[in-house]
Image (cartoon, rainbow, N blue to C red; front, side, top):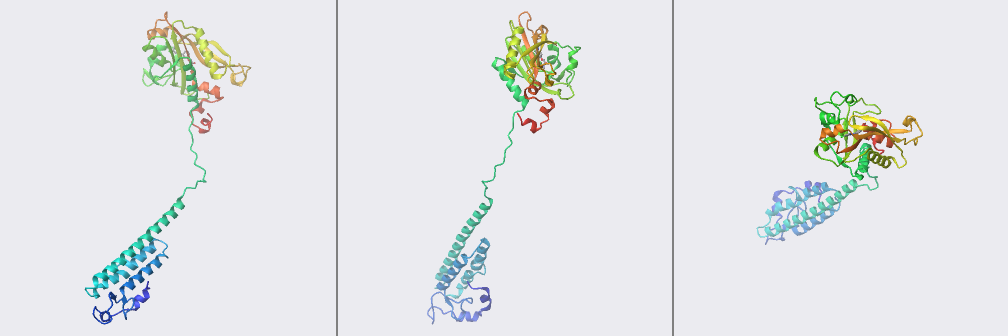
Length: 385
Ligand code: 2NL
């Protein structure tokens, strides 16, 4: 490739250009002789030699290119508007009409070859650049993976599931019902009329005079009894609400598990057998169970169910108030007044029912001393289950 200096220095006047082109039949005529002011303003040069020289030059220049910009520079230098090959093509006019087509063919062939060489190099450089880029972006497989935080089942749901499994194994079915309930199902049908003092301890969140958030899951059992005749063995679990200020043992929302069995000849013995079986499954075979007299408007007789203290084995400690016993649920024989409300004949059928708080069971089982921990969503607490 000739440098710029030589190009600008050797300006050939148009006159001489004509003189130095011998036409076919004239003296010194050589086929495809072309006079280039860039090359030899005295004698001219054989076009075939010139194209060979150009090709050799571009091959050696291409060996030196480092990036796509270098290639583009070469393309301009050779094939651009003022490029070497373009200028030669423009000079075709000085040839005779007979030799012009052949010379044109030769130059166009050269042009194509140069285009091919440039393209090949371009593809090669692009490939190299891509490889380099990919190497930079590559995945470092020695980096430790990002840890995905795994979720866990909430302790209340764990306990609910465990309790449900125990009763399912005894042939109970799980029933669900609305959390927004009618006063009738939540109180009236359970033998708690409007002026009953039991309403004071279970003051609820009222939506209207007759609609409230349920204070227990008993209404689910009423709804089931309304729809079907005994035999009945059901468990009703779910959220309940009471207008209580939150403290370490109270929460305005909590979970209850209630159970109901109704059939001919169900006795208090059945109640004791079922609940003792439950306590042994839930807390261990070595637990003692105690049935203390109690009161509920919907059972008669009623009982409070205690389990021997899990911490001191019944010897007495601060957890059980030095009594050796922990209260875990309430139970009783279904009150005949409730049967009448759902249209069952109390002379024909008898039953037992029980109810427990899932939070209380979970607190006893896992040694948790504050019910609020279940609902604060502190992962340090929740991750332990
Ligand atoms: C407690 C006491 C109890 C019941 C719930 C019940 C349901 C029907 C009829 C009769 Cl439909 N009784 N449920 C019975 C006794 C006690 O729960 O302390 N729960 C946390």
